[in-house]
Amino acid sequence: MRFLPLLALLIALPAAAQDAPLFTRDFPPEEFAQRRERVYDAIGPGAIAVIQGEPTPRGYVRFRQSNEFYYLCGIEVPHAYLVLDGANRRAVVFLPHVEAGRAASEGKTLSADDPDLVRELSGMEGVAAIEELSTALHGMMRRESLPAVYTLFKPAEGTAESRDLGVRRINDRLADAWDGRPSREAHFIGLLRDRLPGVELLDLNPTLDRLRMIKSPREMEMIRTATRLAQGAIEEAMRSVEPGVVEHEIDAVAKYVYYRGGAQGDAYYSLVASGPNAWYPHYHQGARTMQTGELVLMDYAPDYGYYMSDLTRMMPVDGHFSEAHRALYGFYDVAYRAILAHIRPGATPNQVKAEAVADMRAALADWSFAEPRHRAAAETFVEGYASSTRGEYGSLGHFVGMSTHDVGTIDGPLREGMVFTIEPALRVPEEHLYIRNEDLIIIHADRAEIVSGGLAMSIDEIEALMAEEGMLQTVPGVLR
Image (cartoon, rainbow, N blue to C red; front, side):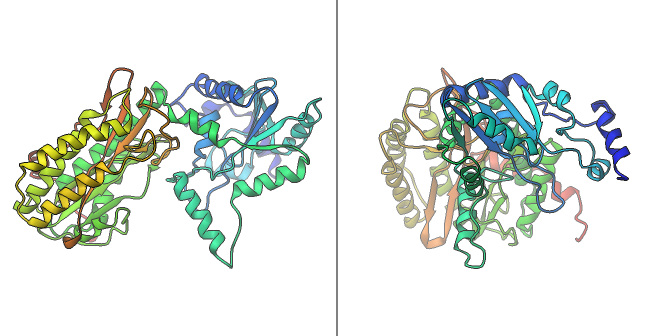
């Protein structure tokens, strides 16, 4: 009972009493409403959609909503539920009540106790408490025609997580004989089946995937900002890399750039791989000390307001490419730029690849390598790229958006609103040598925008940037 006066006070406090936003400033309520309208169009008047938000996170970490829930309403509250009524084209969000002790310690958040404020900020047509969800759903089930219920069948994307990682996480748990718990989504589906007997349950993921595949102008700008931060981090890494630097120190430099620029976290764990570690494309231990004569791969990007980027660059540890690396990387650079040059709206990935391969073969015919095995590796790279076309349309890389490996499938020519990266890799098995760059591309109606095109990529550009003094050289480490 001792918390009731505090609870009443917290509910009565205006939002201005706390100098922090209660609702995202990155998108207006109208954009979330437009997304919901497209969902209504997809599910039709004979269906509803029920989306479960993220739970309270483990540990002292900032809460981050799931991508799917945020995409449809922008509300960042743990244990929230969203119901989209296709018949009435009406959205209702179900929220927890204020937990007085937590609010006094951590600050105000949106809750079921502030329905008018939630409606005002988010544009929701309805706001209710979590305990009212069951009654609301059973009320919908009493309609003359029993509505189908759409929900998420695939893992919701959480902090620094793409769907492929979510699937892996669940599979690992299922394979553990001492755990074996199903996914949170599977558990929720089971509850819906038990509590709404006879209802037809359908997968909402394909609908959301199609919508998320094409980005709006505001989404593109969020991705551009994430890309500018990723570019700044890699540029600072190029200045800071030198023999004796440990991989995790470059991670630290990048994190400074990201958080200083307003990022809310990592898009994925940093891939800073020196020497032979780069052979493993997702190596992320960050434990090795860099040595003279090696190359370093850096693949890292931030989560900026629920939108990601994905960039990669190579750099020589001592600031200068060796003769052998100069010839091999120089060819890779020419081949890589050939791909970028042919990306355009209206072309299929397979068309882009065929045109790029013709340029690669022409360059390879006259290219001089320092080592015969490097020429063999370059030939394997070109022919491997030529044979990598899959399906009617093919693929150039992976989509990027609310997750690094974003949802969506190429279903025709490249078209306006698609955002993706390319990241072809050249391998020299005899040397355990791996070379890969990666850039982010936005397709417009009349052109392809290479968002990261200003990031150093040529040998001269990289060496010039590495000659500048870096953060690690000017800011002493505490333990050094």
